[in-house]
Image: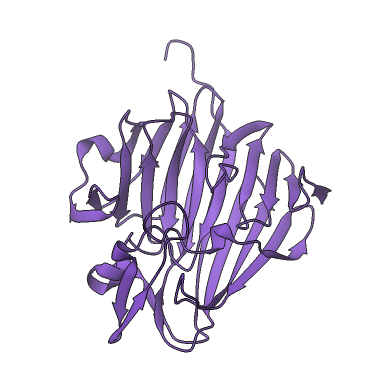
Length: 296
């Protein structure tokens, strides 16, 4: 284990992989394969996170309020956004429970307060296995009543002009002006990546359902590719592509839809009784991109 650039960071290494992780948000701050970055530090309040955990759920809550099991609950904004966003884990300083050259495990707990009614214990394990970065996230309800929980990962992948994405989904949610999902429908042609294609040059912030939990990303200019696999509760995903930056895009495996608290069946949020837990794993496996024959 090597000390990182700041006291709350460490560096993990295995073979061609190097990953810098932080106690702040249990976040990945940098990730390279054969010294080539495949994640971009563009997230978090100060833009220093290349991946962060979303817990006890991800995205926003409409009206900063929810009703569950006959009770009403309220949130307060936790950033400059008017809506409570991405849970609390990404904002907190986590405890380091274990660390070695190839893995680190962090935990974070909070009690219910005026910002959020959720009390929970969460753990994030970051492990290098072969040429893969493996992130395992769990959350346990430590409150006194059942509440709907969720989790997700928010990686910021490098984006180049020739980046190709391959991912399949059965259903797509369009976006309201307030960045919340509107209505489901078939996947539009521009956002249909089943056969693999270049990323569109347009704003995108949409949820997808019905995927096989697999995705592939190719960076021809960099000579590398990534195979993404989601397991456990991560049966949905978000795609986010801003228009003010062209150096990254986000492919976010999640257990639920944004604003699930206000959707039928809570958008996939899982009701957890006190002591019950939810978990999901994301694996990003890197490899060299095969060299194409001349003339292709």
